Length: 594
Image 1 (cartoon, rainbow, N blue to C red):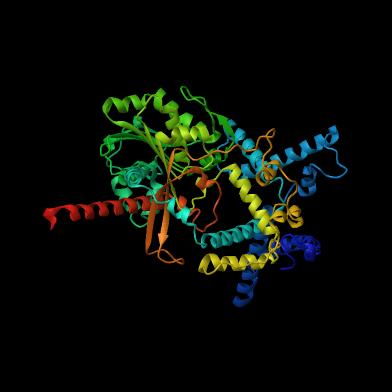
Image 2: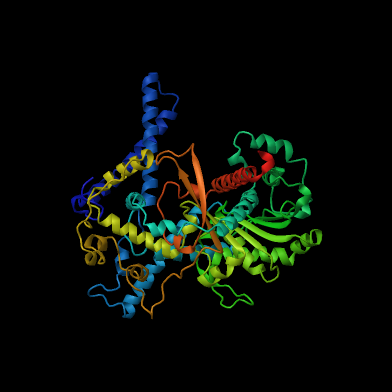
């Protein structure tokens, strides 16, 4: 409660108090053990109220001990003061010398090992092989590079997100310029094309959602799903040769049947096999649209999360493409796995033997959407009529050249302020810069920011006007980092500098810019009131471009807008609205209806 986030002076005595409290932890632990032993001793004869009071005290003591351990594990930084060695232009420290260079290398290696241990601990429940170890190291390097230049704790980040959300709401409440409103008024030809693609997207989103199997079906039908699956799953089942991976009790396949409405004979291949860089998918015949559908599952396991976080860039080599570009490494390896299965195992040949006149359509949501997009690029030369629908794909997926190349055959659908669609390393660096800047220059204590922010997120209202050091400063002064801002930056990283200044021609950015695939449909929620919008929800859709998603937007719905059920609900709402409009126009212009 004393000072501000960037002014710890009034709190300078607190570390000594915390260390003193930590010393008392050991006798407290011994006392809790003694109390537990005493409670478990049945020979002790005491009044019932006394025994119950002691039991409650012992339980409370153990709860405090457990939460203390968890808090220390989360908050404690094993690197400690070593981060100061990252400082590149420190006075009296010559990093050109071999000793300083070795010291810096050792600190970076220590930081990488710390992150690697954390990732291994989180993934302790999965079998770890060579692929996992390589992924752990790659992801640890990514986290080390991202967090090495800041001195922020989780509550600082939470306060920064609250301040950014309120600042963002202030800007959104400002009236738009007439030119900005006119640019979103599409022509009738573009609107007709959009309506057709929305109807197709609503249809194929069922396949993308079905790829999640029984977790999605139970999530969307919590009261009846298990009863329906228990009754129907054992009736219709494809042969074992058509299924790869584990599907106990046939729940996954039964859920796919329920969601898509297909028959078991319509499925060519189903794979529930799941490892890092190897994600489940299925191939089915869609007789309604006369398509062979390849549906790729999104993130649903620790292995999938590791695939998502393997965010290094690699080259994608393609024939007959003028300029190859960069792609997301983990997602590309997942697409390579499915590509080999489809071609080498003859799955697509089998499908086109059954339905030679059908076209190939690849769909997926989230990680599945990104994998489907890269898989579509790989298969484009062999299947020129191929289409791909990527629902909420990751933002950092394709370089600009590849993103432009995919506009002829890929449709990306983004709902609202979806976080994943805006996730890329440059966007994360920009978010870090904004958090540091707004947190460092707020003159209110952190507890006030958090309490008022929680009230604003839950009950709404007008955004708070927190006084900051930015008030009354000239535009030239705003371009320079403030002293408080410098105190939260361990050093000015190249990526951080690149976001504030014009990049130099001879120094490439640390993270190349990657974009969403194909043409982008942005679905936005509109509601009658600014507060709780649960009952009266309307959606509008428009064609968008990748620059709209070049910044992460803070919102309570930044996670829910990514969920597959929300995407499907929005697309069904738009499709039904379009269908009702068509029926109204038919009755209006049909003389026999009068």
